[in-house]
Length: 361
Image (cartoon, rainbow, N blue to C red):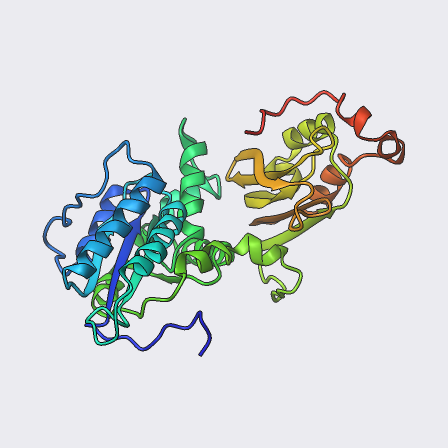
């Protein structure tokens, strides 16, 4: 048995927590109520955090409560409904950090009831409306002022989930539902996609707690797997596809600014999601984080220094979308790379390039 395999668990040997996230309050509440076995009643109230509680603080609070419940002898599972703007990845990673330290401090002795007890997140459930996915990622319909934040939140919740419950399927043709599922499967290849009708069974039939589940999810998002040269995917069938762009040379900040303005659906196809790492010639000390969701793009710091062993040599980005014109994407970004003469000029010259991007903290 490998360390990542769940050990044999029973209802009395584990204490887990299922976290339910989602943009749409009504859908999130419905699924939570169904999982709790209360389809006709209100969603069970949650006393965790408030509107000002950050993701890391909430993760700490949830983990500490699990440890208290374990000490009180409770076993089984707790279902917690998160807020619409929840960041399940930050919450889950914080939980596992606190639980690892807390379990070490408890140090149960052989024969103790807590010996062999498995504690941790059991499921990360994301409830998503097909209407939201179509509007925010497929860029259909009228855009709203908060779409940039909403699309980033939606993608974060979709990519960090063990189960994705899709609502509003009856409001769309079967082909649209199928296409939406196909995109979600590309963004999160390891998640199970289901409907609210299966939520009751999901709450009743508990899967074993998987060790370091949050850390596993954080490393298996679709974009990460696509950028891993050792992971192979079958060729796409139909208009939905993923394209990986690679460029070993740093990118010129002025030309990149111009290129981004021209990467519209009519020129490069519909880019629903892109994520990766990039090198900006004017910022040689750090690696940039490239993230787009729907029509919005965010270029920030990745947290990797250029000298980090895990830092890429150049730029590598995974593009997910519909009817992607891969040649146009490649041409637009390759044209941003430093020319031979610019490369020879060196970092002293690069640092003098006009750079309109926000500072990286």
